[in-house]
Image 1 (spheres, rainbow, N blue to C red):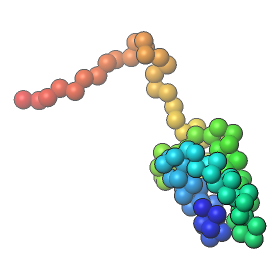
Image 2: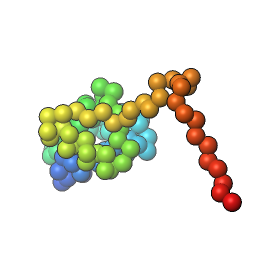
Image 3: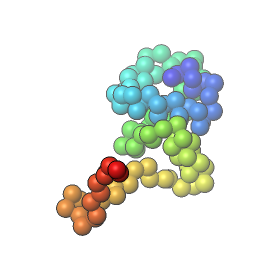
Image 4: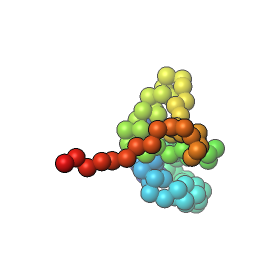
Length: 104
């Protein structure tokens, strides 16, 4: 990830990091640790650290590269998109129940 930070623009770096964090959220702590140990002389570390700091504040991880790019677009417009929305307030909601039926 440190090497990628040196060659990718912000959008692709976010997409790559999001992909890694979707696989395993603990990668965030691991990348922080590796940056502390081996980041001297690597360009792009400051951008990677800034991006990791966003997630350190409890930010949600986008579910796809497309969501990552949409997040970048939202940030570029001065907004902070919310990734995941609850559709139902609670389990006892009066929302209609749906069942799949097999057609004959």
